[in-house]
Length: 213
Image (cartoon, rainbow, N blue to C red; front, side):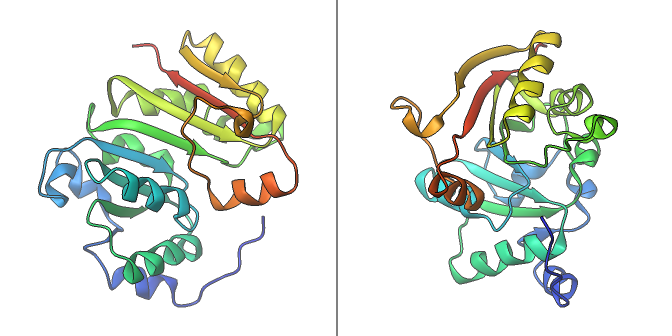
């Protein structure tokens, strides 16, 4: 996907430090304080324009939500939506997910969402995949015990790779779907990409799992 550069993105992001965290390392160990409560924090990595995160936040005001995005031209669109329709339980972080262990203490995150992340199809780039053993270890360093991770993709090869990685790392697979939108027992909130993929007739692959302690 080719990103359309938003020239004013950096300036706008820096204009709302109460909503977007650009230097998140200083909040390590005290993320609950930004919401002024001790409710569980759910994290989405790669929020796009925020559709998924914002819909979840409306459905669950009892949960605090954080969204990470590494592209300024993307996260600024999410910020603009948040300015139009403020959600007190949502905050954004402009950062690369590689820095997760520098941003969060162990146990700060109660639930994790990985939606339609880059499949990095070339074998040489496998370690960049958000379900690689390298990233699973990063998640393990920030999530609470027994936290659940939910993963969605429209890319079968990426899905297959993720399944193999979870088996190899002795992770606990709680639910698998080869066509999420035909499932009746999974509460699903769509992302922007998901809506487009489903309209094209593409199946959505889904895994709910826990990382081995």
